[in-house]
Length: 519
Image (cartoon, rainbow, N blue to C red):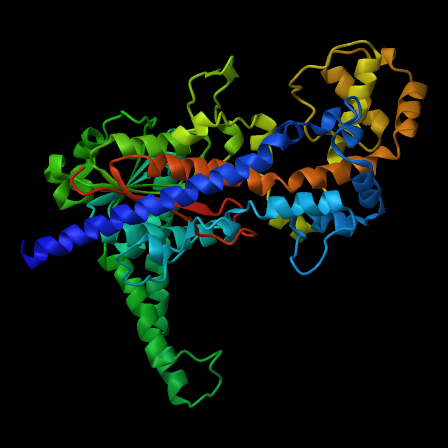
């Protein structure tokens, strides 16, 4: 056996060993998280509207925790979900302390499953500075980092192009093309988004050309400014800085933008190569040999089911060599239901063999809770949960009338913010529900509000306690996806990486997966 063959065999063995170790780590993490979370699934699925009518305060909190929570200031309650510190007791309540500590230990960062981007991408030649023009701060932050990650994966896999699924207005795809010179096909199901992506590119092209002209015009002025020996580095533009800026803008004109947005509904068996074949000449020369075309699949905040569709597309399409995906909107997923021990078809959760074996089930309210941002809530310093108070009072009033409360009530979301008083809110809400306001006298409304006036803080406090579980639920969902990819024979490596700052972009975790060569 020659030296090259020996080296290849060693590399394959190391990769297999690395995958097996990560699979074991992921399995242990899932078992730990589910063991803790399963007991709280009913609590996770409570709704603030039923806080009073279903007596959540007494049902889910022991007396010692109730007493401690009522003694907390609003500021302390806001900090509660992220307050655990190993050197300081977060609360005098042993139940609360144990609850918060166990939840904290089930965060992704504490389970030995996260990778760094450099660990996930074996061939990292360094990142370029991306230019995020015409974006919000949040979008600019996401696109800047995501484009670097996709570029690194693209280079390490020697792919021919990138396919951006759920491309929207083309922020990521255009950035990959413009800054990293990567051919990108953007796929989105909404024609308005495709049209917006094309229009945005036209506007940006005009803006960059104008910017180049301005810099060229200022060239002479800058040279004079430097010659005048001004010492203020903040206001003077040196010859070197000017050259870099001008070269940056020149590059934008020299390198054509290879980004094509299309309106198409994405499915795992859609046959991407056939689609690419029609637009190939616009993107890359290697698109001519469609049978040998390889591409990286990516999606920035693919919503609920689309994130799972993207993973299945990655596994089923022979042209897909790598996946870089950040999901969101977990409430949009569909879960398996278990009847007499037999699960129904699981489209989105659980995906892994392990998850199905453990019969994991979350529920819509729990998945909706997973989309909450603890970092943003804490930064806002605003106590959450009080928005449900009037809705909870309305629930009591409807039940006192002997009427059933619809499972989903449309048309009253945000009504509390438009109403100056509870009476105004109740009258408008009852009208929307088709209930005659005459059935509820003003005295009845006032009496209901008075009887429950001490419950507003209880509702807010309970909501903060429930928020403690938000990152735990998200952890379980992401671990199930990680495990699902690790279970596939065609996948060589899969990593879960925290890409974004959680305060700027709450859904900050990215799945990076690469197929085994030749699959």
